[in-house]
Every structure is written in C-alpha cells, then in structure tokens.
Length: 113
Length: 115
Image (tube, rainbow over all chains, first blue to last red; front, top):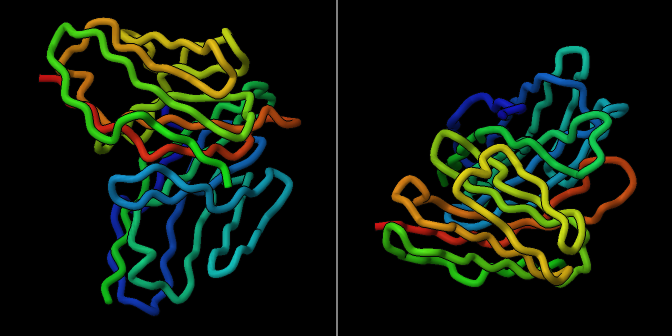
C-alpha cells in the first residue's frame, strides 16, 4: 500500500538552482523521512522530521512538514551535479510498533552541469 | 558506519528454481526488511523481521518466504522463481528504538533476472 506520493515524478534543473520535491501522505504519522538513491544503489537516509516538528535543516537540505495538509517538502539549495539521484519520502504510521516504513514512488532529480 | 551487505549485486536464475538472497548487517539491529523495487511502483515491502526467528508479512509476500536464524542475517527465498519476480531486491535494517519509524539502512541491492 502506497502512503507517500512524490511530486513531481521527474525534475531537471541547472547546477546552482534550488530543487523542491513534495510528498503527500494519507494517514496520521509518527515521523516522515527522506531518502536518496543513486542509480543502481541502495537508499541512503537523509533526514527525519517528527510529526510535532514543522521544519528541519541539514546542510543544504530543508524539510518542511504540514500535518494538517498531510504533506512534506524537501528543498535542496545550490544543487550540484552530484545531487542527481532519486529521492523518496517514507512515513512511519502513528501508533505503529514495528518500525515499518511506507515509501513513495520517488522523484527523479537530474542536475545539469 | 552501518553496513548492510547483500550477497550478490546481479543474479540470473531460471523459472522454477529455488532462489536464495542473503543479507547481513553488522550493527546489531533488531529489525530487518526485504523490499522489491520496480519502475513506477517504488519500494514494496515483502517481509520483515523484528527478532531472531520472528517474521511478519509485508504487502506482497506471495511467492516468497524468509529465514532469520541469526540476528545479523536475513534471507529471502523465492520458492519457485517466476518471470514476474524479476526485479531489484533491497535489504534494510534498523534499530527497534522507542516509538515507530527508526531510519533504515540499506544494502546496495540485488538485481535478479528470472529467465
């Protein structure tokens, strides 16, 4: 069952520009996480935002969470060619006890040098 | 750093074969997960385990089984491989932690082709 849906499905920008990806989900959550996947590799955890947080920063990453709209956004500032990857949001449902995450379908980001 | 190691990056098997995919983690994580990833469908959970010898079905368990005899190792078994099981398989692990939704650490995946 898909919980998170990313938007857009694909994004192409020039190096130095900012990239914004959005994620919508359906049920109450405990936290929302963003992951990155380089082509042919596994996913790498980027950042976690809890349901009682509205914004979080990590280096060039900024994540926002709006629980009233059941949505989150990931902003990558001053993008680099090395940021080219797929980005996934994942939600941990409220009250879940098994640490299961539900992943969205991902946004493919291409940063042109 | 956490390391999750999957035994093969690429694997080619024939229809009807019994296929074993192995995953080992070195961080004493309680939870381990098996996903398959297909274009346009994202990651779908096949099975997960929160302790040795414990397992729970995910969203798409049909045609698969798992084994967790030791804490660090989680195996995915395709009982009788079929062509629709051609996919990228990803293993992940995480701490049990307090509250749900601990970050997961992934292996590099096994690209499995069933001919």
